[in-house]
Length: 432
RNA sequence: UCCAGCGUAGCUCAAUGGGUAGAGCAUCCGGCUGUUAACCGGAGGGUCGCAGGUUCGAGCCCUGCCGCUGGAGCCA
Image (cartoon, rainbow, N blue to C red; front, side, top):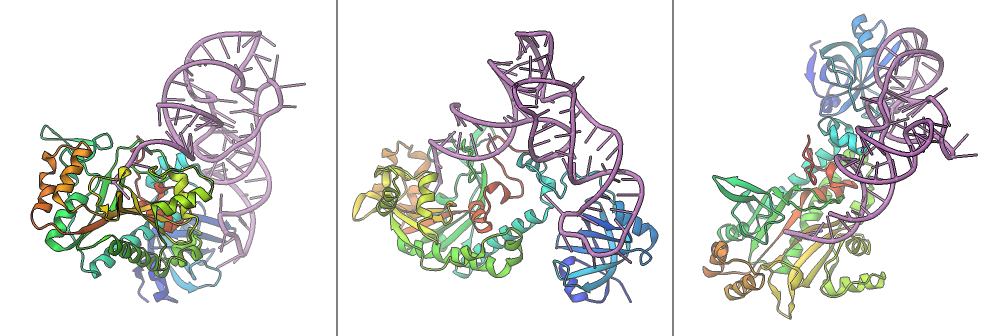
């Protein structure tokens, strides 16, 4: 019989056959004449059983003292076994060392977050972290597949941007041939130009905020998905936000059950995420807060506590629209029924996870927009190209930005966004 | 930037009222034929974050600094 070189995720196709697996030692246990090695290969984890007399002596010895995370090749027979977590085991016939590891700092026991973050490059190898990475990837694919199917064109926007936009205190400066430019905070303004070319577009990439925010939901570098649609009003935009979130939640539920289980995610909470999502106005949100005993006045923005109270009032994501214009960006269109209100919308995830989407309808009237730039004390020169979108065939349009890491944190049920990206960039921390 | 808490073995933590530093895991040695963070026995392992101060005596009290964690503020 020929030994085939396979990966752990394919074990089910090779029951009873002899195979070769290459990977790393995840853990090992010994019980005298029988020794167990947990082998991980990046596609899964399988237990390899070494029985004295049934494997060459060097391999049997190795099974007792090979250091954790050493790279090895194990040959053996695939066996279905109800006792095994994955349903399959490997009865080992031999093992070769590819590379012996030095004593590995991350043991199968508990560690503090500081230690784990300092060893993030190694921490990624753990079962939990791999499960998060798989779900993150599933969410990205789900978002893109959904938008692509709806006729969106992914066009992407620049990461280096000229000075402008609202203030520079939260921007990371970069030297650009002697000129100071900045890392992008959002691709929205560019998307508005692109949607006039292709009707429905989106960008997906990293964005940067030099905020001094030290919370469980802030990164200085995070990934944002930003769709922008020509001829969409606020209601159509809320429909899209709702459909998009339903699409990714059900996709993760269908395709990443195992990973959700590893993360001990409460599946029922995700299964409750179905259409329609509640849509409330800012004024209605204020009522909820007042009933909860919070002192919030019209014109106040919501902090973390307020978001938590509102989102916990519903078991689905909730959309809050028609915010006071004064606390929103200059480009938001005003509500036709009340000029003090902006046609913006935020989506708050359930279970206190806070804002995962922010967006709304854009101001499409040239004169209004110019007036707004003055009110917000913004220079007009850098915005000439942006105003051109209104000069040459202006059209109603809307869009939003979805924060990927917050969405992943919610779907995975994680306390902190730092685990949702392989190498998180946090306030003044950039190692490894 | 502000508030609070924490810095002791490789890791996670303990140490009466100030009196010669302790456990589990990891490592090494030994035992065990079905272990699931295996278990059992033994051994090695310490500049108690750094600097100064009080005291006969400081891991413990005081001052300053550094680092981390949680939160607030800030924030598409």
